[in-house]
Length: 83
Image 1 (cartoon, helix red, strand yellow):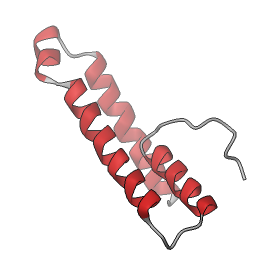
Image 2 (image 1 turned 60 degrees about the vertical axis):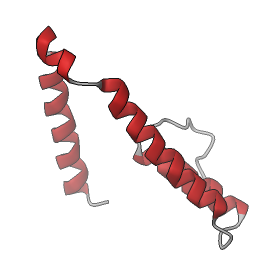
Image 3 (image 1 turned 135 degrees about the vertical axis):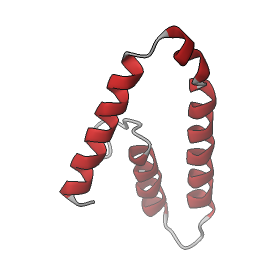
């Protein structure tokens, strides 16, 4: 990923975070955080299932792909997968 895109993405996340932190109670009620998180989780699980079912990948490649999916979804995997 290009550094410009990463910086742009970070700026967007920070802007949205500021907006969410300043929302009043009525606006907060309109955002279904659980539904959004569930949708992201289901997509990630589907991606992981597709990796596991991919017969063209060896076990190491599957683990690497799964870790990438977790990174893509901002799920920290710790430092164990630092090859």
